[in-house]
Length: 283
Ligand code: GLU
Image 1: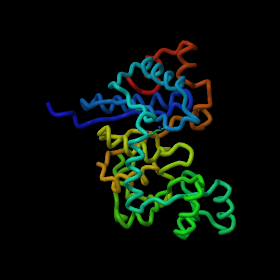
Image 2 (image 1 turned 45 degrees about the vertical axis):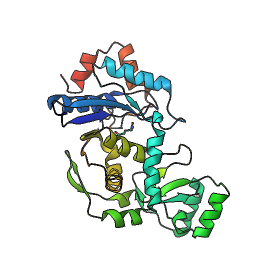
Image 3 (image 1 turned 60 degrees about the horizontal axis):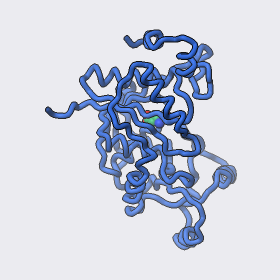
Image 4 (image 1 turned 60 degrees about the vertical axis):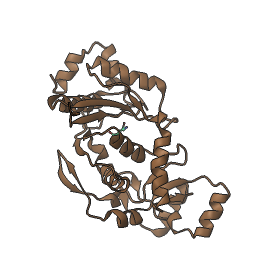
């Protein structure tokens, strides 16, 4: 029997407890797959050991099982696959598409102040290109001296390879011309953890054959960059569905730090999975 065409995933980062917003996203993803005879995967995005804990990972399994979700095993834990991410990055580096960035946050802020203007994206002010402009001698001597550095995508060079007419499709918002300039020269390899969310998520979605990515609209802008990475790495382009985020009664986005609405606290205060599913609009 041919493999089902639809493969979805829920990909939380174990940096805190899951809340109602995560439950909504997970249920939406699961029901999308279920209604189409597809597969539903869970992936643990735990590349950042400074923020992720095994307790939070255990909590994710417990919360999702309580909610009545079932996922395929084995579950991919990104922290076990750093070599895959390094290999993907090495390919980009060999093609001259990455450059080392030695800047601290303060260096960047100082340069933005000096230049007197700062284009902004969803992740804050865009990188003003300081290390892209280093001479190769300067770059080599800092590397030889072992200065800590991240690796950034040289977006200008990347777009010369991919062309600038990339498109992706969002089920909720329609066809989207990719606008990676909203993220600029993004960091693909962080100084502290040796990879990045952007690189790891794009790699794993391709590796796991994800056909439909359902996630919150807070990641909408990131998708513009992800589309460029897919083109550079020769990966297939999934369809996206960036859903609205749940808000509290005051209209604020739910956050992991608000303990009251975590699934654990709801469970402990007597909410049943059936109540919650109903509240979120699922049978
Ligand atoms: N791991 C990301 C998060 O928890 C979500 C990744 C994604 O869905 O692309 O925010």
